[in-house]
Length: 369
Image 1 (tube, helix red, strand yellow):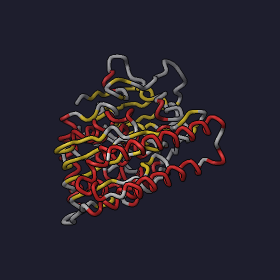
Image 2 (tube, rainbow, N blue to C red; image 1 turned 135 degrees about the vertical axis):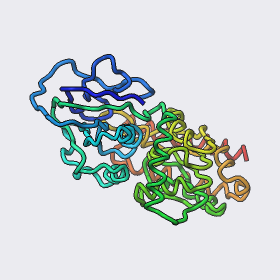
Image 3 (spheres, rainbow, N blue to C red; image 1 turned 30 degrees about the horizontal axis):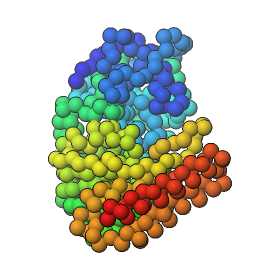
Image 4 (cartoon, one colour; image 1 turned 120 degrees about the vertical axis):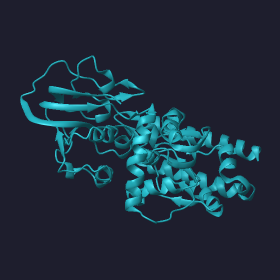
């Protein structure tokens, strides 16, 4: 993996929201591989001019943006830390925040600090840049992994060499579950209709229904690496494997949105001994709006009949189809009711279409069985 040392380099904090990447380290054009990458292409938007009156006379390793989002932190903000440590230069870490993000390390949420704690990063060895600054010396490594592209082979090796001994140290001798289903049934947004009913049959097959939001980050990693078989529902929990090398067993991924199939495949597949994906589930839409835009990740999904058959295997013949449909319909109505005081004419049309599409798909399910 490449690295470069820059002298008197200018840094502009990111505009909000972070994920638009307006800002960053103002690199020369000759170093595109060191910029912030998605799908292996630079996505940061670097200004050509501006005022950089603040001067920091120290030397640092640049380790990435810092932000309050769990999924994005693991998917794309932490993947310079271990490569930087490989340089063994003893330099402190430098993060870039947004202009309105916390300026102190300990002011970030605990679920973010847990990730950095696992990586040995803390308030004593880190600096956060939140104003335009010129830094005397900045060492930059390329990202070991980037969103939509996945990890390099070299980086996977680094992750295994760091994370597995670390987890062994924390959880020495502790057993976990051989069969794990990573659930979203506690979420009302971004959920699968009837998931709680399906989980009862998975439990009968010996699966532990794991709700990662109830556990620490390192515990989540330990569960994922010790399972012989693991089923991931689509969501930020999938990013819990980002700091593992090739250290998870047979993995099945269940999609919610076709637009994210490749993203999560590139997270899970390189780390799994065997990878399967159930990509044909029915996304019914979303009623969540932000700044006039429908938020797809907060929508609802119905399991495809083939997904149910693959998940439940022999138990599929035991399923009471009416009970499953009733459970799914209940979840659908609960979802719509949640937005009852916010339903504009446009959202009312979407909600009616959700109900219509649901009925069509239920009839299809009944006919297939």
